[in-house]
Length: 66
Image 1: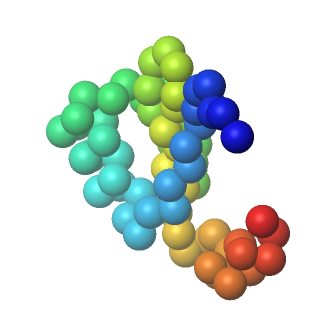
Image 2: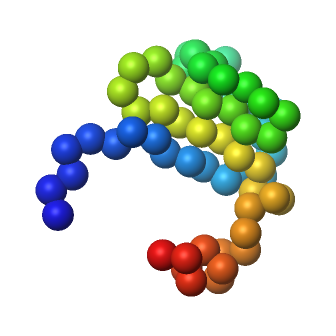
Image 3: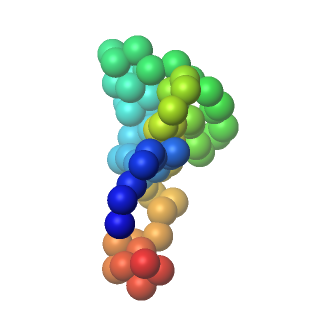
């Protein structure tokens, strides 16, 4: 497999507000879209999406989906 680019990376985070503070306030990543349980950060190229881990499927279920 030869990966040319990454379009989006999704992170399941423990604390959405604290993660936004880190990626937006500390690292300076601009917020593209913000919803109650989802935030997209970045400009051009790859986007970083933050999603609360509490509403994400358990790890063992994710492995079954792959």
